[in-house]
Amino acid sequence: MTTKAAPTARPSAPPPLAVSATGLRKSYGGKTVLDGIDLAVPAGSVFSLLGPNGAGKTTVVKILSTLITADGGQARIAGHDLAAEPQAVRAAIGVTGQFSAVDGLITGEENMLLMADLHHLSKREGRRVAAELLERFDLVEAAKRPAATYSGGMRRRLDIAMTLVGDPGIIFLDEPTTGLDPRSRRTMWGIVRELVSGGATVFLTTQYLEEADQLSDRIAVLSDGRIAAEGRAEELKRIVPGGHVRLRFADRSAYAFAASALRGSTADDEVQALTVPSDGSQRELRSVLDWLDSEGIEADELTVHTPDLDDVFFALTGGTDKTGKAVR
Image (cartoon, rainbow, N blue to C red; front, top):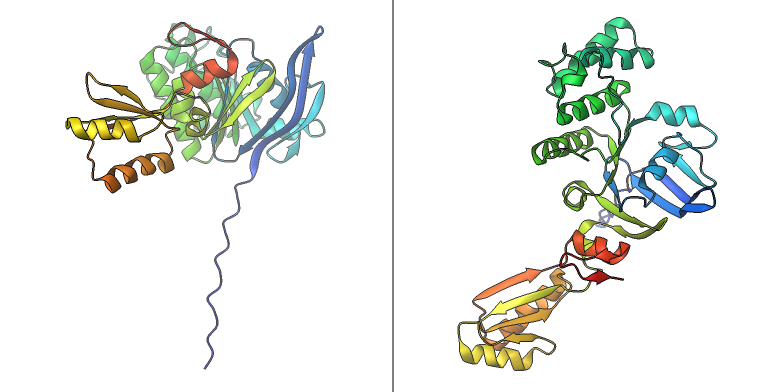
């Protein structure tokens, strides 16, 4: 009797790209702002473009959202060619710029209904969508008040609510939390997470390193018109030197033996601690733990230190680090 082998499970296909770009270039008056930008943003993810003022982040958003044209390169948004199908691109996206599009002279509800009219929704459908979004963004009580009376956080929430009237699958948020207090910023983070959990793709530009770290599936660091590095937050942190494992020993003899055996480590005799260079990866941490086990040595305290996005940002874009020391 013969039996058939069980079919081999095929690896799941990667998600389609919501945004892809190759070789984007843009200059103003002889000054190169973008110098060959390549981007790949999977659908249903948060992608952060991180960089200092003047790095070209807003220019990238303006190009990808059809507000300006690139001098060179190609891009596809939601499967549509940016240059050949701009109308189809506009129908698939929503954009919240650095500066609020809210009209302060009319109420929050009227701002929403105006946006519904621009999307050619019927009056009935427009009122339904506006009511749902005002409730979703906790603006019902303020809906009848002029938007000029709103706080900065409320205006930003209204701005994003207006962006969602057309139910876009791809949302560009250009520094959406600039100028907001910490509480409003965290509220905005919750909104971004909710959008992605609902199936949207979010393309975010930011100067806030914590924001990129908290929200992003992938981060690209833009510097001098080029992508200096790209990857997951943990991957980016490993490209900067300075990571280490710190071992502290209560037993003097164990400390002395480890200090002599672990090459490259730095000893602190006062507290009986060793600093062992490490990239913070699971592989390197396991090698340290395996060595301790093999020698029968127990460290009373073990901590892993990896560079954070601050270190990555300063190393890749120049300037000064957190201690005020010049970088690059």
